[in-house]
Structures are given as C-alpha cells and as structure tokens.
Length: 213
Ligand SMILES: [Zn+2]
Image (cartoon, rainbow, N blue to C red):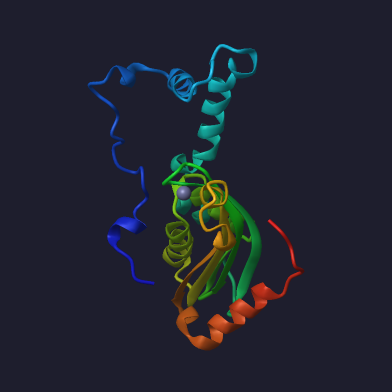
C-alpha cells in the first residue's frame, strides 16, 4: 500500500490549533456543546438536555482517548521471544471509531495476522493496539495502515496483514450510498504481499459464522 508521510503520522500529535484570539478559546467543552445545542434550535436548559454537555464532554474524552496512549509503549511491555514461524491470527476484533470528516461512528471488525521472526506480541495486546488507533478521529484506511505498521516496527516480523470491515454511520444515516456502506480496507506488509500468504490469511478470516454488526 502506497501512502504519503502525512497519513502515517499520528493526527493530533502536533500542537493543536486552538482558537487563540477567539472568545471561544476560554470556553469550556461544556459551554461549547451547549452552544451547539442552542445553534441547532434546541433549548439547552430543558430537563433532558441540561446535563448533556457534561455527558458529551465525557463521551468525547473516552472516544478519543487513543491520543493519550502510546502504541509502542503498549506493545514493548508484552514482547516474547518464541521459536514459532507460522501465522498468528487474531480475528473479529470489535472496533468502534469516529470518522474524522463528520465525527460520526464507524464500526466493525478488524483482523490482524503476522508471521513472527523471533518475537511475538502477547495476544491480548492486539485488540488493545486496535483500540489505541480506533479511539481517535480516523479514516478507515489510516486506521488499517497504522495497526500494520506499528506491528511491523515493533517486532520486525516476516510480514503483517490487517483487514478492516466497517460500516460508517455518516453514510448510512445520511442516506448516502446505503447499499455500499460496508467498506473493506487492507494493509499487507512483507510476506503478506505474496499471493500464497495473503490467500491463507484471507481464507482463515472468512472461516466464520455469518454475523451482523
Ligand atoms: Zn464520515
């Protein structure tokens, strides 16, 4: 997968552009959400909405907590030296993220595989790695690439394959291309670029009961 430098860098890693000269820069998140509620024509004071700014603030903090987690630190604490050179697969990892274009959810399944080259990652860390990148404002393509490249960087395996299948509420709820709203992206590095390895991975992740997400 070819990509520009920009796409592989963590968005938000640089200095955030705050509204420095604006009165908004001193507003709390709660005040900003309250303003949005008012702007869409609602009454932020009515009973059902009065606590909403606080809840939205907390929800947004949770849904973007990946910005405060370092994927390398996460994995470096769980590396093991193992004589094993067959494919390791963790599939059907549940993923929930926010699209960076509309800040609406996209969600689905992530399948991760790699062939070790002396080191393996503790299995439970793979879903955690997915979460570190999913809990940010994302595009599905970059999410896919970041998961693959981080594993490649940290354990230098023979290869990594990542497939993400997701549905985007910004397409489904707004009625855009409803029938085609499930998107599949993949990143194949190293030996996963070989047809045989890639085919083995893809056939292994297809071995599952039909399910809905
Ligand atoms: Zn979107």
